Length: 342
Ligand code: ATP
Ligand code: MG
Image 1 (spheres, rainbow, N blue to C red):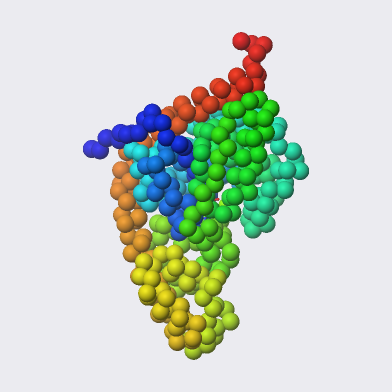
Image 2 (image 1 turned 180 degrees about the vertical axis):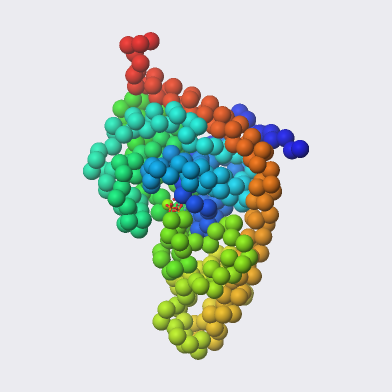
């Protein structure tokens, strides 16, 4: 039986904090937007990955069971793409209640006008057609607590999250100004594809959009999704010149097909009306499937060993909490909030 052992304790590295809302399994947009950077940078930075279950309640507070299920799926997805639990710390947000203390201090620092002006929040309310809870409107403030609670230097995210990181930076600056240097001002790091298009041609592939190719999709599902994928709607016959830009099948070829000559050849022929969608899709299926095979295998490894997966999560959450407790203690001292009961 494998014994889980964390290797990097007490190393004086810069920190990464990043994570995902467990609103569904992770997709290939997450991969190019943020997961790839997490995997690449995990040895260089002390990396903390948040399973944002408290955030998930902001979508619908009644969905506890579904959220728990999705937490586990998102956890497996992170391990499947190569997050090494002996190197990175992957933890459950609700396991660190001190984050919520920080959240309540930060809530007093952000005006109502500033909160509702956040473009990430506005966009999401629109495309998810939400009647947003207060928790949803304030989710960037909770995210600021997640990030600043670790004094993270770097936050790997997709482009849609940039306004949220900007709000985190504002909170850190305002706090430092009021109470002295406490927080590091974190920077965002966007992945090699800032915002991967959805299979329906919508600007963003999204867990809640039913326009996603999942990292855990099996071959059959992948084939079906690629077959049904939106292409260039103005192209009726294979002999019509087609548009490659903002065409999901070509965006995916560019992002996941390592055979660059094949991609250039398909693009050229598509523009000239010399290749059908069928060939482009068949070749995309081969490339995407090759990309997903090792991810599926690694996922299966952990799926088959739930006791190890659980042990890792418990130990990692404890370790992450220690870091946050220290920082929140410093915040209390800076604010002198407990002066009268000391
Ligand atoms: P939801 O629809 O529930 O908001 P989501 O698909 O947007 O789900 P999140 O958990 O909100 O996923 O995002 C996790 C991380 O993945 C964030 O850093 C986000 O910017 C990034 N991300 C999400 N979708 C994409 C995408 N299509 N392209 C690039 N990055 C993405
Ligand atoms: Mg999102």
